[in-house]
Image 1 (cartoon, one colour):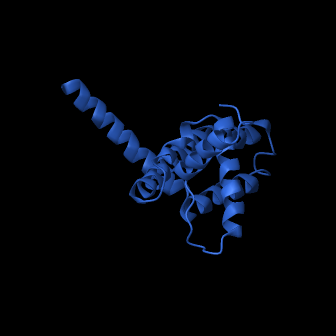
Image 2 (cartoon, one colour):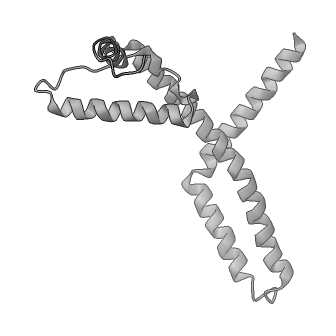
Length: 158
């Protein structure tokens, strides 16, 4: 039990730190500070005779910051992406006419997503032809229509 509590505390600390770092690095204060550092570095060039050490300071600093920021940005994007997916899943689950098969489609392969995309392009084309803009098309309706076509058209593969 203590091990899991320590694990939760560590995750909680990291989560708080990452959230604070993300919030700070996206702020105006962080941008102004970074700009000030670059200006100070540029102004000190003549003082240090534009030496290799002077250049190495900015190169090393920007490399380290860039390296760390890549991971921080990826973590923030993963979290935001997950939150958006959960919100969309809730909307799908709550909508009476929506197909629940659309929940968690982010785990499908690229070709499966392309197939769904083609389906929705077809639905959009059909919807443009509808006189009633409130007419609903769903994957379940498409499946029923497909099964109906399979029964009546012998040239379709079963």
